[in-house]
Image (cartoon, rainbow, N blue to C red; front, side, top):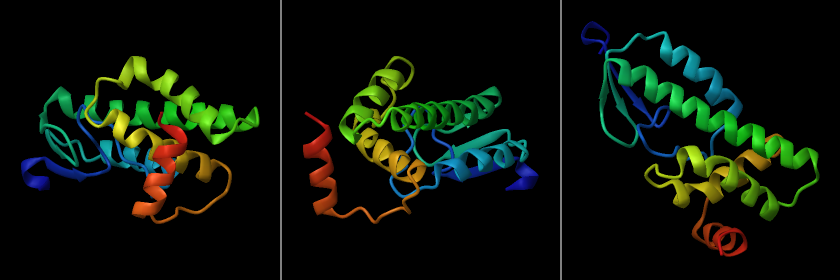
Length: 143
């Protein structure tokens, strides 16, 4: 609602909540967040988490960008060291937990986010998440 300076951000921006990256293009998402900033919204309705207003709008966008950037950079570093997906998950969990571990659904979406970033940075296209794939990932990464 441009006249009211209200932005319904959907899953592009979360508020105090970990983003779900399972089928996303994380690199493009980071670029899109710059465009979202240019809306100069005064109220932001996120995909998940509380509605934010005023300086909270910039904070929610910045926080989402920081999460995605740290996720991407940590996974990239792990791939460069030829780390397995299991080792990568542990590296990312250790890197993100201090700053984002208290966010809603942090632990729930982390396996999917790590797998998606690993796939994207390795050149794989997003894959559809099915119940079988979910269960296999949880069993292999989360212990």
